[in-house]
Image (cartoon, rainbow, N blue to C red; front, side, top):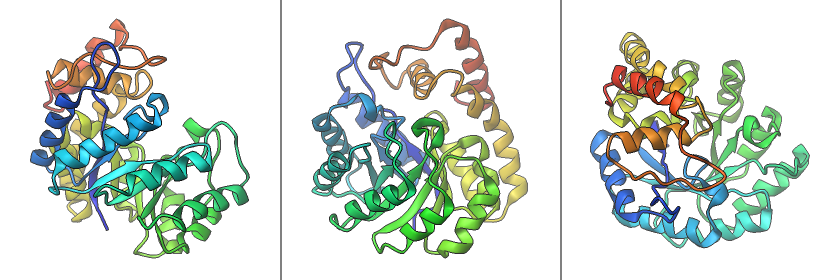
Length: 291
């Protein structure tokens, strides 16, 4: 089981919106050197919704290539079409990935029974561990705990990224799904509380900008050094907030550009960070030691 800070990596782009693989290689090295435990390639933060299927697979393949076995790579292969999610998962599985991240199908709002059928269909056909991703704020559909418990019985489904910020609910999952079922926070601002409740770490947006500090905070929390974890999280909290002043990954890409790590490329309908938020993001970066 992976534990600690796992980065939901941005997909760097040139100003014309094409993928910037040179910057991607640099980001991979940045995370390996900073103690990030794993890279999630082409999740929400990686702009999966606006990349083509071929582009998603190319980014995953290049990420695996650049990592070169140093840390695990988790491929974002979810979709609101079961057939598309299966295709992405099958193609990603040709590379040396550790697991796949499967988001709850968005927009079409299936039933809970439909969720069980969707995730089971993929897990039973591709021999790669699957991590569920429940993010009601993006999908307009909540995967309830009873559904997650049913899915945890599928041998190939090994964990969940929970972006509900409902800490008692997470504690319930850890109790009912067993210690081998990983529960990761999908929200940086409640990651520490989730780990206090028995969670296993965070699939983090903030780690894009401050990977070493986020990794140290998660490690302290998981080691039971809560005083140290609280101290570090106090430095991270302004950044947790600032990176969501506009829709993710707009602020995180702007921050990485300010750090000189990527170019100012983002793909429509996402746009570059509004000027009114530049100073608040800069201040938060400074507090976290990223500026």
